Every structure is written in structure tokens, then in C-alpha cells.
Image (cartoon, rainbow, N blue to C red; front, top):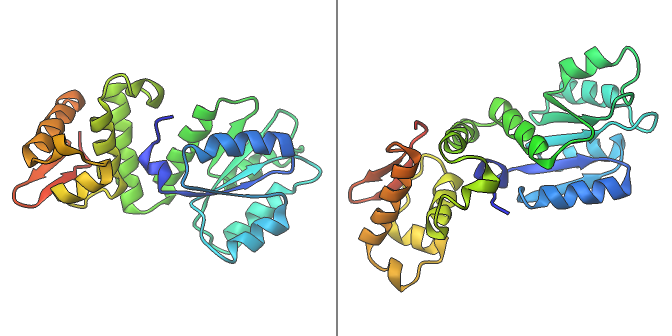
Length: 228
């Protein structure tokens, strides 16, 4: 599965108490995220947050076992910077809680859903709550999708080397990558021994993106521009 750079640099905390559902969702998310930490209740969520920062907290609403409104109020009162996304079926949210949950959460996904919808909501939430680098990458990736189509069809439009270069450059938006760094990132072989071969692939990428999104910094290397 093609991975989206803005997501592969993120760490996700998944809170659910339905073992089968959680296993299925976790397996799908792990193909898009570097790290997925799974917990089963509010206490474990708060314990996990004491030891590290998470980019996204994904809460599966399952009343009466989970009091998401109380948990989110605690998170907001403690000024956690994590984006909070709710997953809820019709009827899961108790009367009187809907407006409170939706005003405090960053996104809501309704069951049943496609994993692409969850990933899209996560990307949006990371763009709004994350660092400038995350926002720049998300903006860039939105433009990539506009030019080349969604992730699941993009592989047909780009060569394996072009895909590898795009992922390498988006891992550190704004950073300049030397030819040696890019060769290490993409597993360069003899055909990539000369810098002009990388330049050819970069030119091809820019042509497909319809812009000079990937900049050549003469004498130094290449970097991603946030504009397409």
C-alpha cells in the first residue's frame, strides 16, 4: 500500500474496547502510520499521555463503557496538543452529548466507514493542529493528489523511483537533500550513480505534478516547495 508522508511521520493513540474491530482498524492504520499504540479505556489513554506525545488520539465511542465527553474535557483542560478524532455509530452518542463532543473533538467519523475516510480526517486534523512542517507537507500532499489522483491510483502514474524520491523528500519538508542522501533513502543502484539520473527523475516528477514543486538547489541538492 502506498504510504502518505504526512501520516508516516505521525504517532497515533487508538482507544477502543472492541477487540475484533480494534484489531482490524489497527492493522489498517499501521500500514499508514509509523507507530500505533492501542489502549482500551480512558485511564489507559491518560496513562499513555503521561509518557509521550501523540499526534492523533482516535477514540472509538462505545457507551456505556467509554465516557468520551469526560475524557476530551480532561484532555482540553490539560492543554494536550493531540488532535482528537471520534469514531461513532448512530446512537452511540448519548442525548445531550452530541454538541459537546463535536465542539471539543477535531473530527468525527461515522460507522460504517472506509479506511480512506479515517486517513483523510487524520490528515486534516494534523494539518490544523500540527507543526508548520506537518502543515506544509499536508498542503503539498493535497496538491499532489489533485494532480495525480488518490493514493491508491497514484502508483500507476509514477515509477517506483519517482515514488521513492517523493517519499524521501516529503519526510523532511523544506530540508535540502544531497544526491548521496537521496541515494541512501531510495536504495540507489548503479543506474543512480550519477547525479544527472536523479535530476532526470526530479524533472519527470515536476512534469507530472505540473509545476516546479521540487526545487533544485545548485551545488547542494533538492528540496520540496510547499507550492504547486
